[in-house]
Image (cartoon, rainbow, N blue to C red):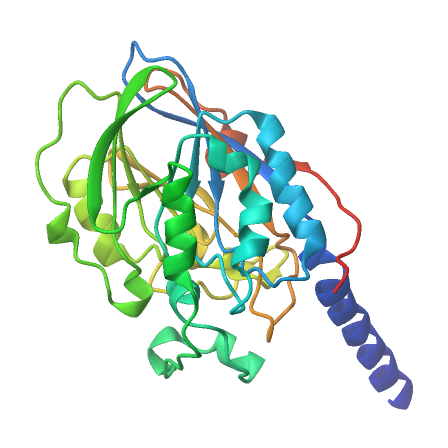
Length: 317
């Protein structure tokens, strides 16, 4: 019995060590193909970045994200939770630096507005309705917003806009973070120019109450983050929680929402500094190739299981 307890404790310690020391720095590029464009449209490549939760000293994360510019995406979409520290704005800008020169859109999440607070990690596994929300100190999201806008990225917080990407007209709109109940879909509701090849929606937390109106208004694709892919996944089971009302089967990757709309949820690139562990769920960015609706995606593309891994050296903290 004593040997069993010792062996179990050792296995648990090894798993925790892997989750904290290795996997949360195992930067991964996820790829997928989505048939969402008009039949006569050319492919559009979107780089989806979410949940950086950046600390000033996370240098390997900064280098890896900056190198994503080599993928030459047509559009960068940032779905929030960039910050985890009052002094993290320069680190986020170093990470996104080359990508800020490309067309981009963004919204913010709760951890752009408020800093993380120490809490019992077991709270992460509690049902969402039983959690009492605890806000940390205010973060400098206005400084980050000003820098993004100065570089030409568009803030889609309760905004709708039409612009050109890769020589084609697209429509995009977004809401403020539903996790904080700041979403007001009515402010972006309404008809859209019929000449666009894509209707794109973005939100931080993929709450069904927000996804449903996006779908009912004919959006082709919605991008979201927030879930961290579950952060701790059990092989053969998947995510244990999503930290929102989204079902666990959609915690990361591509899925259908309704008959006509596609949803992509990023597992994100960071964690709270007070819960710095990932298991069976490496940090990720996603390169999504949008193609005409007549193009049938492969089974692997639909399930978003094809990944290309890029490994960086351990962070220097």
